[in-house]
Every structure is written in C-alpha cells, then in structure tokens.
Amino acid sequence: MIYEPLASLPFPAIPPAIEVRTYAKGRDDTAALRTLNEAFAEDWEYTPVTREDWPAWLDSPEWRPDLNVVAVDGEEVVGVCLCLISEERIKWMGRRDGYVDTLCVRPSFQRRGVGRALLLSALEALRTAGMVSATLDTDEDNPTQAPRFYQQLGFREIWRWVAYGTELR
Image 1: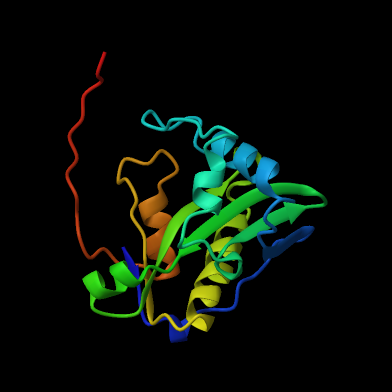
Image 2: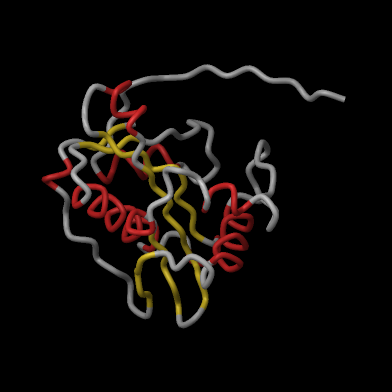
C-alpha cells in the first residue's frame, strides 16, 4: 500500500496520557521488543523476535533513529512504528519512497488512536527526511483488519502478493 504525497499529511491526534516520541536505542529496546511480540502474538505466521535477534534491526544499515517512533504511557512502551529509507528501494520504486516496516500496538491499547498517532508521526519523519511517498505491506487476512485501517488513513493498494509456504521438518 502507498501513501502519497507525504506533503498532505493530517496532524496526528495523540490520545490522552500517551506520548509519541523518537525511539531511544538502548532505552526502548526491551520494551519495544515486548510490545512487538505481544502485538503480533495472535498472528498464525508470526515468529517471536528474541532479544538476541533484535539488534539485527537496530544495527542494520537502514536504521535511523529519526525514522522510528514509540508511543508511551508513562514509562511503558505501548506502540512502535519502525521505518527505513533504502537507496536500493528508492531506485526500485523510481521515487523517494520510505518504507513502513512495522507498526504495532499492544492489544490493550488498540482501537484508541495510538496506531494512527504513531503512523502519522512516522510518516511525518519520512517526509522530513525528504521522502515523497511511503509504502508498507500488510496481510489482507490480518486479524486486526490492518488494510482497512491503512485505507482510512489515506493509503491505497498498489500491488498484491501471493505467498505460498509450508512447514519444514
């Protein structure tokens, strides 16, 4: 799905008692990982990310702290939005396109506007970084009805993937 142009972003309404801020590497790692695993626990194809695996994202060449945001309630991270800018992806897309890799909100905080505030804040970060559009991938069978959520925010479908898989033993 794509959001373009990023120049037309609505202002994010942040729910009461929630703060949306830039991800703090080192400080937010454990809580963000817990949020990620809790948010996707019901997804049949999700494999929990371990503390040992998490640095692979944080140490990747595309990691930029200014493109990643968290929602916090007090000291508790309740949502995460991780984005990246890849020169290879920009070439492939033919435009300055940022990628929303992960958006997740703890189930007890879903349907309160936290995901919307996170995503709009992250899209603003991508716009500030010089991107003209942002894309993301989502499963149309997502139990949280993510495609509908993204469409309500202004994303539109631009491609469809069909994936096949089997469990290897």
